[in-house]
Image (spheres, rainbow, N blue to C red):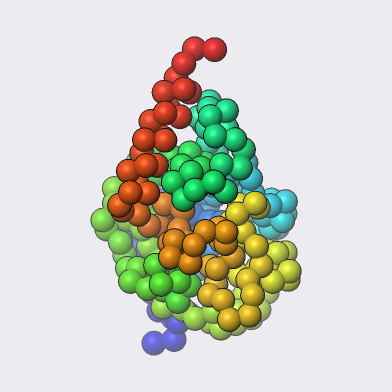
Length: 246
């Protein structure tokens, strides 16, 4: 089956199963814009949510505005709790993610995972733009992942980067401006760089870490071992500090 046909079938099946309790979670990379296009063409009232961490590139805000104009929608922004973000910065510094993997995971937990958990409260399912070919850590992602409280749906799971480019250009979709600067994966501004020849698509994420470190933020991958136990301790300290009266 052609990738586009398969993705449309997945979208249709998800809408049939979950109806209005279904959202699109978008970082506004090419894949996410494709998923938005596929979904809104069938169900134009579907909510589009994005994680506004407070550290996203200006170009991300620009493409959000482009997508809003094209589809006549308002993107909902999920933001970290101000007290939690302030406590984290006070304890560990604004760029704590440079110091160690657990610190980076803590930053992602406060700025991404916790806001997402709140945003998904009461949501039956959500679409993502994940693809298996993006990285080894994504090679086994399921199209319908029912392991969490909200079903995670990845209609582009089997797409190649060529499939993504083809659909983007054939449908004249907006593109994040950082692609033109050599980026192949786009996240927070200080945590993303352009990739080099021969690197995988996510090599530009947290590039200062060892090659063995998994290039995931916790939204789509739950690390185990010492790093996870350490980040849990760090998070408890941040939450305790955030709860202190000013």
